[in-house]
Length: 472
Ligand SMILES: Cc1ncc(COP(=O)(O)O)c(C=O)c1O
Image 1 (cartoon, helix red, strand yellow):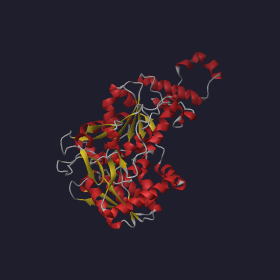
Image 2 (cartoon, rainbow, N blue to C red):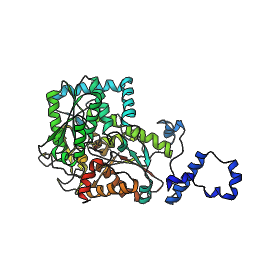
Image 3 (cartoon, rainbow, N blue to C red):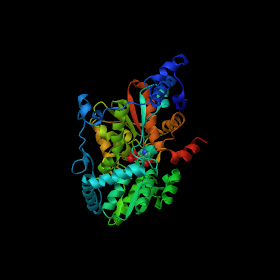
Image 4 (cartoon, protein in one colour):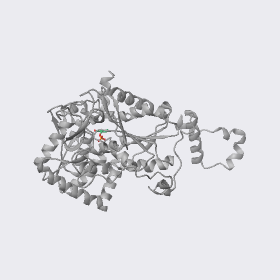
């Protein structure tokens, strides 16, 4: 009924008073706003659940100003990392064969120049807006909020971006870099296929050759995205080694890069790998948090109490968290894939069963056995099914700045269904892990708090898999 209320008379507009009141009637738009507010508050029995209409004065929006006055600007962690060697404390670094040291240095230098180049920033901003569809909305999930009976829950709608996930933010940044460096070919690894689709999309757009490596198991469970990549003109190489998922796809991509580095750029899809990738991907993804910060200050006139995001390699989570790291009042929760429970080889929650090690270019938390052999992993969601976690996350956990937990396959599937039925949004299975955590935590939190959860992608790619599991 909410859609219709703007046109209905409210109680104070009863017939007897109508004639006199009409003379002083506020403009139609204002009347409609008031009616909508009342109707929504009534329909939920919660006055705090009003559509966010207030606009915040410009001064409050500027980072620093009003926030410093409110005492929020405590420097809780050092947001200037990584250091010159690409380290976040003991994590990160650059652990690669000698042949890749030079291209990584070149990439680091070119990225540093691009970051300072107003023309590069202008071009990136232009394509993010006009091609990808930024800014994405920060949407108050009214029915989910009411159902859980806790804080207001806002969804950062990265699922509405072109290609259907946050991955395009980073792919766009890296393709512009590749062009600056004169590369004619790009390669990418992909798990859920969303990064592969994003890389294939930007490659098509700028006319570069594109090869995407994807594990055979992932090709099967994310078939829709394989077709999309092929339609976009990319070559998809199905990787049959080992576990046939993301780790093996990264190995193949690195092999290709070593061989073809002169004309090829490797568009790595998450905040992992050798320096400068974790830093560079974070910086391309921080637009999520920058926007969310501005939007929540506009809509609620305050900072959120809790940020929640799923963590595969960690790019959507660090993208949301990073611009809030200095805000002591904002808690953060990263959700890994708990698979079938924390049993070796049946999950991908690196902070639950992992230990310090080196994998695919970086030092971080890794699922490995006593001999340092990488363990098998499992998750219902291909995008979270990886044995290592981004080094900055490992460091943030050590600093007690971000809390990390996990959601099981069953919890994620339940959250997938709940969001679809309550909000009319089918989330990616990866994002459903974050929703599952919100469903568990929100009922225990005070109602006057605010949660932002990153809806990193949409679930079209997962529909066939979930339908088969649910025997639809
Ligand atoms: C929709 C979606 N969300 C999240 C992820 C996890 O990646 P990251 O941790 O880098 O955000 C993926 C990975 O494929 C994804 O497709």
